[in-house]
Image (cartoon, rainbow, N blue to C red; front, side):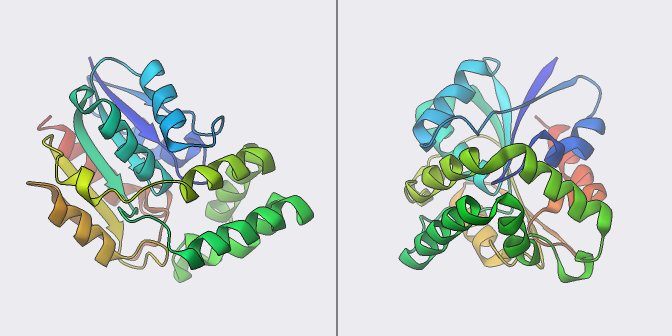
Length: 231
């Protein structure tokens, strides 16, 4: 049995990867990391490694990618393959930190639903804004995460370091995916990651925003399973 550990993004739960887990090839076993209990990348990665199998493929979306970089810093020998989806290798700019602080304040003053109202337009492609099932899943994940965990996640994200140097030292098979309409971590950042990792493959998902695993699950599953077939 081969193992894959999925790492969700900000405000997301295991539901983010439900379509991928359901479609994994025979012989693969999935685990979803808990990224809601700690307020630093170091602690989140340490908890992931404590709970994970000895060797595994690591797949992270957005914040999940940031966590993956820290896992690679702490225990590169345990990662047999890497999948980075709709993410960035750069640390936050000052304006991004300020936006995160304002979202934390909004969450405390008006609740997590107000945060989702602010983020939903950049989370998914414009063509999917009216998709009640998709937006309902995103809102349900955010409600399950809650305000306190959201703040911890944001603190961890704001405290992360630039990861480009880490990527240059990655020597496991790597797949980078990004939605062509991703407004938060656009394709140019995916190209930057793929260029930094030796031998990485890049897949652009058409008609897709930042939440590729739910927006275009078929395309993500096809690319992921083709990658896993060679791990």
